[in-house]
Length: 344
Ligand SMILES: [Zn+2]
Ligand SMILES: [Zn+2]
Image 1 (cartoon, rainbow, N blue to C red):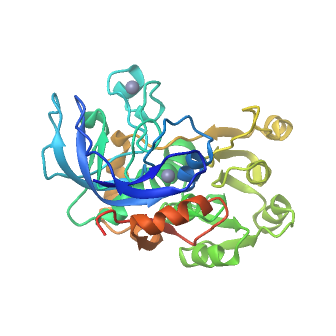
Image 2 (image 1 turned 60 degrees about the horizontal axis):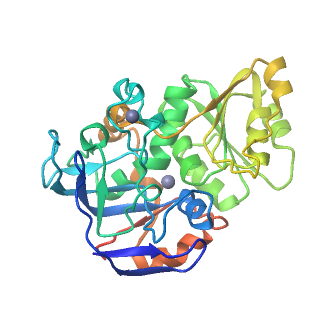
């Protein structure tokens, strides 16, 4: 098969022929029809994750089951499927309680094994992790769910328990942030969107953001308090010391902060304004993807048109183009998602 191969950390990415994957016991091989390019791929490329070389990135995917390993009972060749970026083991207490997103024995395509920037990808524990894609949901839309959209959905629903008419501050209007704007509006909440780029904020406005703030060095928390008296929920969709702090300090008393953007630091410790968290009784929450078990509620909102992840797709490119884009994904802030069709 053709795949985008990484031979060295932060080295060039090459599209070339590699051996086809084989379905593991309990797993499947999926023919990839669409796969998303994400800042997490850049984190892996630059060396923030522990990956074995040579490596094939890619963790947001949808496609068709091409072969089925031993012991799989729920899936057959030809099924249209997607998968969360965290594949639970299917056996531990977290997986069995529907929380495969925190499985201690988890696999992740594009990180712990070869991913979906290829014509085919092997996936583990298919009966636990695969999600059927309804016929009227396109592969591109389905691929956009697995990481950023589902993560946003779970951050706002399962973690922050966002209520209608509440205010949510979304810091960062990339894939996660724009997903959060769309989802928050669909849930009946009000949104303040924050980003460095006016273009990204234009998209946030089109998706229904009630206020937008350009992060041009101004005091973002002060601006949010001026506008709405502080938000009930805030989400750091970027992952930096600055954006995390802005999110926490934008909250009103007893507000809920959700950290979604990864915060890699040399010490592994991330500074947060704990004094404010204590005095104002803030909830500081982490969010790590969403288990397949939680997809039905989200898919129902997509099927009835309340959520339109396809509207977040900015462009669809081939593997070669994606290989040149990936190393720029720390700076490039495309207003929306970049999808890859490996069959192009
Ligand atoms: Zn991702
Ligand atoms: Zn597990």
